[in-house]
Length: 206
Image 1 (tube, rainbow, N blue to C red):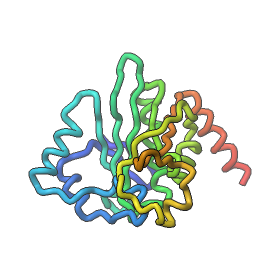
Image 2: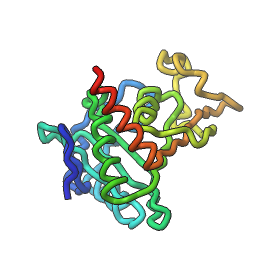
Image 3: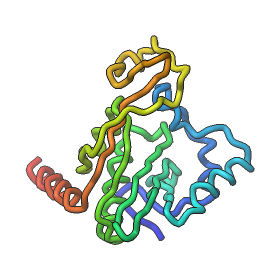
């Protein structure tokens, strides 16, 4: 099974794809370092893949670009088939960020998700400080559905880092513990369709 867009092909994630992640770049921004693929042994990669794909409530997909480069993966997590909803996960090789692959991947996959799989809604969570990702999801039609404070993954974060100082209002320091604000977002099928219609109309008038 393949889902094709103008520049991307999305297909079920295979173990061979995961080994290719060893060649991915690294994010310079320490706030999103948890998106970097960790240094894993062959056995650990096999366990990572099994953990991701063994549950019937999760489905993961590889994202390839027009040059047949493996540039990212996405997940439908916590699938609720009766309610026709799931939670989105999306990770890209840092070398291919800010090249509109995220926009095209979401447009392509969400069209499949809502129209082929006939799902009703999708959820996701995004850090408030991750403005680029937040804007991408808003442009797809996602709306805020919750807002909460969470324990930050790196408790040794350099609080004098310019990356942190630029977005420090998205963080809370309490008892020497670091927390950050998270948006929970939701996309209904009708909102996605309406957003695509508006986007098409804007293109006609440009």
